[in-house]
Image (cartoon, rainbow, N blue to C red; front, side, top):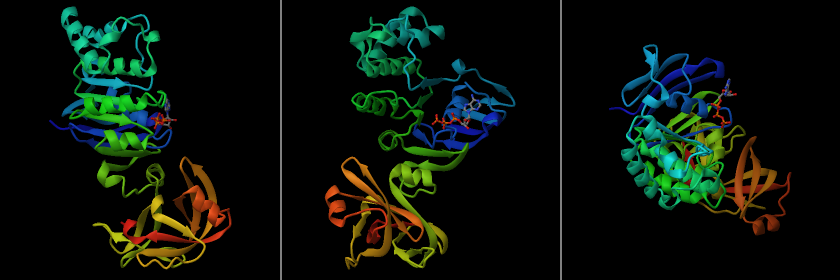
Length: 347
Ligand SMILES: Nc1ncnc2c1ncn2[C@@H]1O[C@H](COP(=O)(O)OP(=O)(O)OP(=O)(O)O)[C@@H](O)[C@H]1O
């Protein structure tokens, strides 16, 4: 058996996908609004038909020129932003629903649903109606309903997005337990979800796959501005030279070369917390010292993100409020940025 293979297009949405997801792993699908994440999920769930190409799940073609397998026969469970429980059914009946609609006898369906509710910590809620549940409880029940059918693939379309901040960590840790070893796809806008739940990641932009691979390989070396912003690393473009990246104005930012760093056009990724700002050159040897001009100052929780201009490109530095006050940071101010060379990856 193989994982998931999508080589398909949905013309009206201008979405053309070419993707391979490994079996038994959770793949996060990320990208800006309108990038095609929901379309991707729709192609897998069967809510959408491709105009051209094929979709294969574990070696079985579920959509393509040869035919179309309807959603309920794909072995796929879908968990969405809203739990979509049936309001007129109690929790137990909701959890039994998928099994009953697949012809499982009532007695067996009831036992299986109870076991699943137990696993998601909802055994004491069986007789409640959905309107008597909190958002987090409803999502747990939806997860029990999804897993009760013993799906081959679990699709999660922003499952924590509609939840209050207090409930999300519980659901995240529940998902971590229940997705382990399962082939699953998680659409999310949250870096924490990618880091805690997924082993693989697919980045979509304007209906195309722009990056895919293991989280550990893709996230530290973003090749798209979206991913760089998403992970909070700076991405500088220039020419790779020996041990550094030369920018348009000739400034060379020293760094560590990755395996695929060869002379020519390339990138340097720099975490925002590896950039320091000073009124004058700090003369620290392992650091790059470059002249910059402040563009913008944005408070971000405990830190202040200062975006500076470095040879026409944006470079973000996360500073403490104290440091920002001491430097008198304001747009237009000329500063020296120090960048730890060991934190710079060239590729
Ligand atoms: N029902 C539809 N009919 C036609 N075009 C659609 C439809 N739904 C979405 N689109 C378009 O298809 C493209 C992909 O949309 P999709 O919903 O898959 O993106 P997304 O990444 O899930 O976005 P979001 O993060 O906002 O949910 C977008 O250009 C969108 O405007």
